[in-house]
Image 1 (cartoon, rainbow over the protein chains, first blue to last red):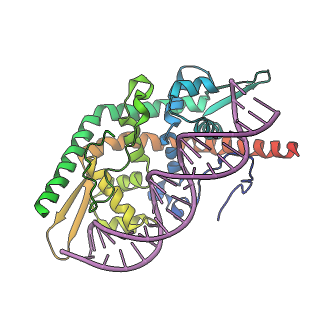
Image 2 (cartoon, chains in turn green, red, orange, brown):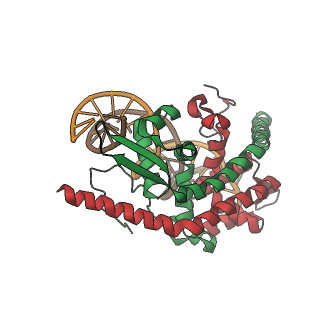
Image 3 (cartoon, helix red, strand yellow):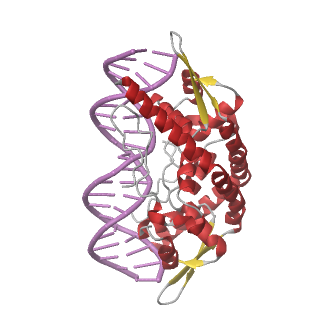
Length: 150
Length: 150
DNA sequence: CGGAATCCTACACGATACTG
DNA sequence: CAGTATCGTGTAGGATTCCG
């Protein structure tokens, strides 16, 4: 229900992606709509952050990115780039040559995201020790309960 | 491999969660390790952000959160809260009464996350129009290609 | 009330093979 | 080179039921 473009015809990767119910009109604590979650999901998905951070430095070609990332499947690189392109964060330029040459770079909008992302990365750097320690304590407490439960 | 606490015995929810290979030692563009992605995944998952934003205001009980969020299953609320508790972002207080009363609140660490999160939310607010427009243009272009392809 | 255990399904993702 | 198409799998997450 509430499908915008039902043109999900075979012949295109699942770019239109998931947008099933989108929080059931919860409105994100009455301040936001579901856009926030969608966009957060995008930059937090398995590869986007990495692609963005690589494109921060310079324009890159498809297989260049592929080699650089090492571990990404060609499919997921395609899907990720399509997502980012669809959201206007990344620009895709096809040079009509043979062999084909396709270049990707950050859009201006993508660059504005960069600052925010980096503050998030910074927070993680600053606090990851605390988090790791918290996890250890938590797990230890769990194990302790298991023992006392015997 | 590389499992820290293999105490994933039946009798605990899947808190220890996913940590399968963690980027294959890619080191996040040689600047970060996989912690970043893990933590980003945490706050960007389906409900965490919402829970955190609700706990920003005040301490809340389990079913209070459940009612407030409207759409979350009890299972996912439990899982989400456990995750956040494990990472030290949320504090869980059990009052030994009958009927039981369990309260959740943001930890100090959780509060430090709040600022970063809000900058992200702010970015989304400021740019969501651009993103929506970019998507429309992208989808339109796609449709156009489909037409010309006939 | 605040969970835990179990079952089930949809989808994200990887591997592989083919194309312009 | 830069994709697309197809298949197989793991898992996130919902529904339901039971427990202290």
